[in-house]
Length: 301
Image 1 (cartoon, one colour):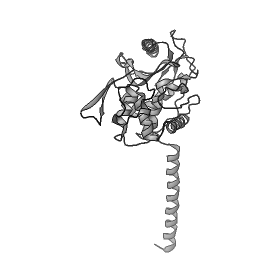
Image 2: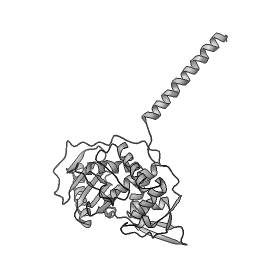
Image 3: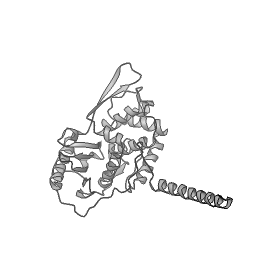
Image 4: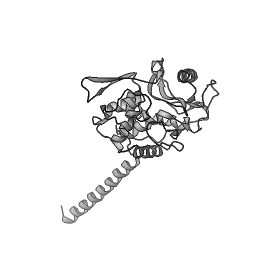
């Protein structure tokens, strides 16, 4: 082979390598990943409101029911009304933690600051837990102390973690969702039924969130107390219904009343996304949610 021919192929190989490099970089840019599991962030969770039905009368402030498989909205009541969402905030908090990709075997200790005005908790000040167990406590029993400890351990402060939650909401395209802290105790943590439905869809993309929130019970270990454990019970009573809960979260503060979001599946494999906000009673929250789900599954069958 002549030097001229060698030079030609050498230059061609170099140019081809450059093109392939920029092509690969472009593909990576167009398909960013988001989440501990490395799942691609889906920015296509938009719903079709063209076929909304009147549906049953429900005693609540706002709600939405979506066919998860095609995005069709079956029922909507004040779906774009901005309201406090209480502990539903913890779904986004969990996403922020998992996005960091940190070792969840790391530990944190419940502090007095974590316990201040934290509502009920089975985690005493001084308890040492793994971040994974704190995540279970935050999502299953909606433990505010555990949620604050997670925020401190992963972002350094509650304020910094709140900013990260808002960054996450912006990346998810949520225009009416704002967070000031991770627990939902702050009445300024607000969203809409429409955007909460999108939040639970994004949350389901995280295997850890879907798995944890679908557990009825879980036992966490207190690492600085010999042979000491704490049993957690899920606050979501839909888990004891005929439907399978694939993911979900409850919420309550006085300003928000009782709230619930869930992705559920019936025995036929049909899936519905549920959000009920502002229900004036704990048991009523699940009663009204069951009525809406029963109606929705009859409609899609």
